[in-house]
Image (cartoon, rainbow, N blue to C red; front, side, top):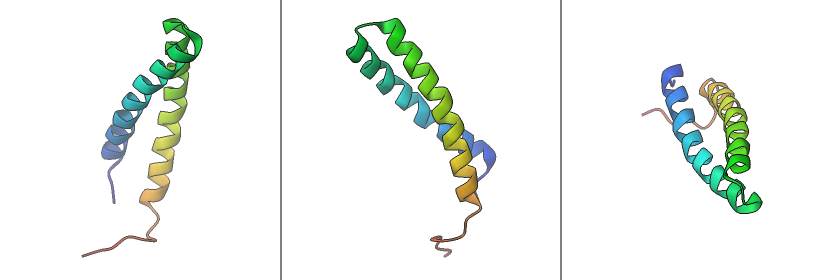
Length: 68
């Protein structure tokens, strides 16, 4: 099983990458760094929460695990 701390660190690392990508996409779509950054912040907050919950649920599901 994965610790909550590991899940949180993975979620943060993934969302930092997503934040950068979303900022660039938002800037490209709107032409505004402020709007692009705002979109990225909102997306990152929602994504981080959803990813953390998703990982914690899957940490308790035994299906598909190989123990060796």
